[in-house]
Image 1 (cartoon, rainbow, N blue to C red):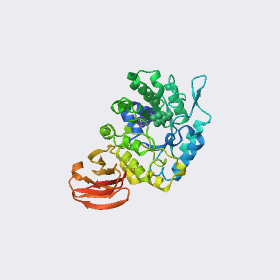
Image 2: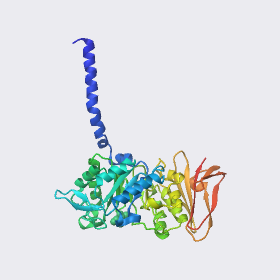
Image 3: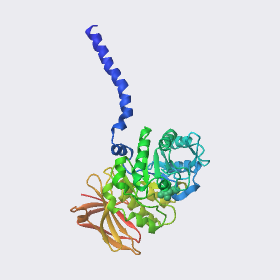
Image 4: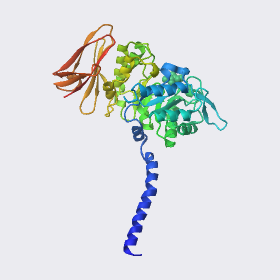
Length: 398
Ligand code: GLA
């Protein structure tokens, strides 16, 4: 063989090797990642989307899900960052003789529904339980974990909320982590990226172990409802969990109630601000097809969403409490901070955030994220009169 020919052949051999090895490497790529690193790829910032439960509960069906996806686009929510359309409980049908889960008559064709949602540039989520039955009494994944994960992947599902419920009939409490690990592994084994949302109501401190098994988010509490009392009881009691959240793995104080009618717009602004300060998943729970202008304005406030979605992924925490007022702070990237001045009391009250509370020295620039207005430079502090059950939320920087 001549020298040049040998060089051509050996170059081709190298290229051939790369051509064969590269796709194999790319395919097996995620396998080399730890569960936590894989989770970080799936949810680098808190997931944003919509879920059927809070507004529709069992009255959800495929037609409404399509319309909600349409509305997510038309309302500007998709453009503001919302991505997941999540079907909660009550979609499940019986199993086929070979064990494969089916969807019930309300969801005639899950694959077609996923295709539709994907065609709008959105992603589809689904719900199950590790027990024999879901919370609403539908078919759970017990005995079919691998098979169900494969079915979800086949349908084109992108997100799973996995709700403990009847699993206690089959498993001991000390098996709970193992049970969630099995589904995490099964989802990953499908090769399809599927966000994993754990729902065991904060019972076994999931913030301590869910990141290591590849959990992307975990409920920290029992269910929210559309009331000031319940929303604030949950939201203002999350400060101690701040250190457990970070890119890929998030504390989930439950889905949003904004726009469902049980709170005032002032209270919904507080709800949304608090969830953003908590770096919580922003999963709208209202009917996107029929939103008031005020509801849409709250859910698409990009300055508040940017606080939630800040890439540094720090969760905020309470820095001060005086009477019925609280000041919370969230470190942002580029050495900026978000601060929220909350008034949980019954009458308008002046609330003051001081730079010492975030270890900073003034003067600092202040921008009001609900008024969308710069408030100038402030030497030591910023104060505002906050309405009853209201909030003033600011971004501050040097
Ligand atoms: C539990 C969950 C809720 C919802 C219902 C559905 O209560 O916490 O978020 O998913 O089940 O049955």
